Length: 223
Image (cartoon, rainbow, N blue to C red; front, side):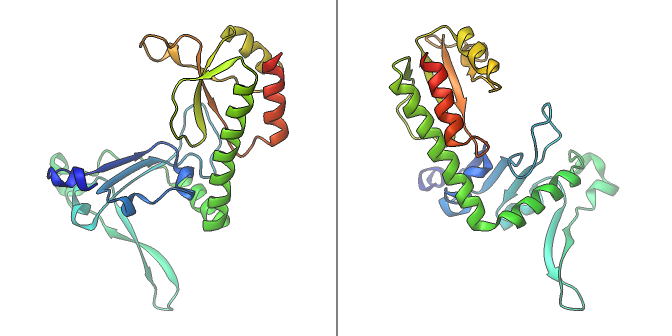
């Protein structure tokens, strides 16, 4: 953040997998000015691409430049904790051509589901899930490398997704996994055109997979 701010520009932190924040530093702690992320992992099942929810946050000095309506926390006349509409720009009603809020969609039910999930999990629960995800992903990567049928593409830190290059035909891998009710990894060359991506696969591991599941995946892919 110091390098970015020394150039008089803002640091934008985009978070693809928000569950990772259970073990990573919060964007504000690393000096981010704006943060945007996907919150699908917080209590919402995969649903053919949506609807899900996401979030957009910024520091107080930029709050009037972001789209949407700002909901804040306060207390009512009885001293109970409540949430209220803290900031709602009038431009969205009287000068729509200058408004920044009209791009918003209403996914309140998704937000409610995420809030319920987060309130039930708590800080410790999110930490435990995040830790389980990253440990399980590294566990599976090591198992697959030990089979001798895969090799690393990048030697760098990762959370719960990793790339491996298969020495076997990808179609045979997909067939084995689908035949045992596992979703096969993504074939990267179908999405990116760079060279040397043939047979490069993106594996993902979440808390729904047990160690027994991962052992079984490694076993059938070693055959």
